[in-house]
Amino acid sequence: MHCPFCRHPDSRVVDSRTSDDGSTIRRRRQCPHCNRRFTTVETASLSVVKRSGATEPFSREKIAGGVRKACQGRPVSEDDLALLAQKVEETLRSAGSAEIDAYEIGLAILGPLRELDEVAYLRFASVYQAFDSLEDFEAAITVLRAEHESEADDDADEPVEPSGEDVRTS
Image 1 (tube, rainbow, N blue to C red):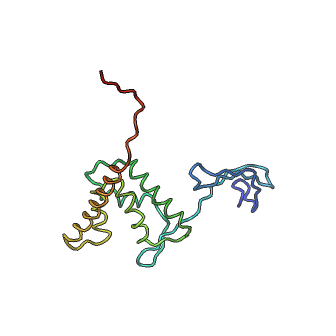
Image 2: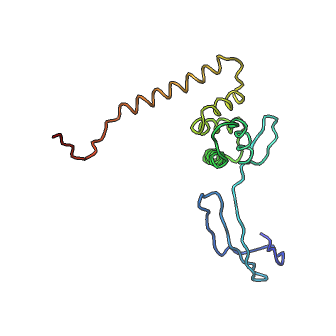
Image 3: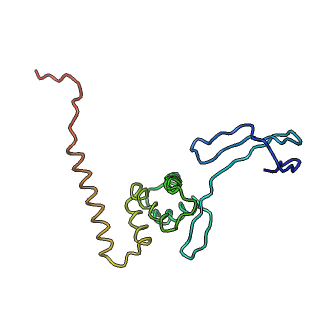
């Protein structure tokens, strides 16, 4: 690491701290030549391998932009899109690979998007999974309905906790 003040080719790390989300490391450094201190921020790079074979840096903004189109006219805020993009990035980084296939990014988007808004999920899935017919939409809707029914059944099976209130009839 070159000193930004005197361009000396070496520096000493004085202090290191990770960010709250753990995605970056902030280091305080000191130049042994001029004794001035400076800060560096380190992040692990994540590259996307496109279908064409080209690679580009991962971008949360591109995730949010792609999902934004599917959410048009839906009650989804910019904060919701930012959180979704963060979840997708965390999922991809937890895989431990420095290069991720573009197709895997789409798969990582589907789960959080379905939780966020089912209509937007269907829109995104129809393009991403190349729905060709009404049957493709019907199959996706059938899966969503089945999940809703199983969730409703799970909720009905849960025992009701007594409130602890003393109820007396007169």
